[in-house]
Image 1 (tube, one colour):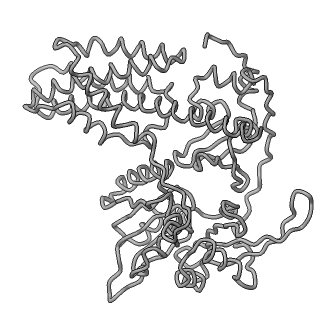
Image 2 (cartoon, rainbow, N blue to C red; image 1 turned 180 degrees about the horizontal axis):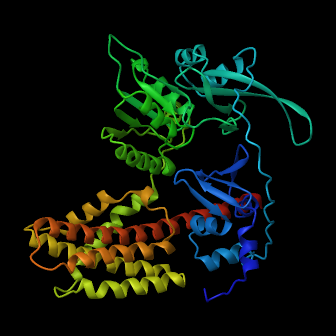
Image 3 (tube, helix red, strand yellow; image 1 turned 120 degrees about the horizontal axis):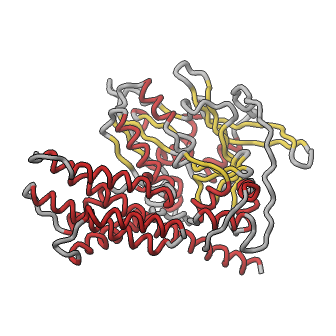
Length: 489
């Protein structure tokens, strides 16, 4: 795309586009989630008005930034699309929302019985009756009954399953509601809920012993499904449903119960769950927890595993596209080493490649930008191999590829490609500054130098993988849009 000058008014209008209407016109399906709308294709992302938030990455912004991230477009193309330049469609501006007064937390009023909740959990979700009954007796699960005025001004009675979270004094501080009538229906936390106290169970002493294991889930249904699948001695272990993917409830339980020192992350087997598991593992490591593992359902989540076990259709697991792309990308980079001349000069060539990368990005030439990244990564590996040889270590292309793959974490690769040049420049400067050190270098200094070159190679690999993942997602969205258009025709 050639250079386009946008006025401040045009940028303001593009950033003010109502994302719900915009996404619906792109063929996206949206799911109600409290006052927000959640993307059916990526449950970690919610939109409201012209704002969006990625709950997995804990980041968000306004419409232009969303289109750049979600559709992998450079800034000019994102603005043009939001202004309707491609289709001639004029999108509505988001209405300014009045600040909502924060209500004090209160549990939803309870119904006189739990007939609907039991039907939903036992017949609809296929959970174990004894497991559900235990939590019901503890008053952690109940059926609510609320009279709410609908959009037509009519008063309607709504029933939900409520999953309560108590604090250390037994006081309710959190509640998660789940609709009882339709699959994929309403779910959300009650206003004023404290995220540090969500639905959980603390292990009870068994023969004088209490388990030190904490199992962590995204939602209460996931937790109960896991217990229904693996009920043996379940009461001695501890469990928490984050009611999302934020770490607050997990960390609070670990703080209150120091004996919990082994954490099993049992999140959804999809892109958002995989990223959240990586992020939570890092958070726990920073807190000193080194016994952290991830348990993955065979299907998309633990309730889908129950369905599959009963011979019913189940949603399949979704592998992370960046993980799938990582191995071939790293193998491709390592394979380029054999084609490099023995007199290659990374210190001289890398700054020029980085400058060319910036130019290609500016004009949206992603294929050429990716080629620059491949060349930069290969030269960085060349420099790392040089350091390893000086330490008496020989690294084959296969070993180097494996090292890159083992260091790659998809949750660390969510930023916009357009923002990577600065990070790469910093990594290059760090490697070059170490190289310029005077005097005879120690083994430790050589190792730091090798690590700096490997970090730079990894940074380049991340860009390549991100570009390829964006292209894959864009192709899938276009295919879905075409399918939706054919279905509606």
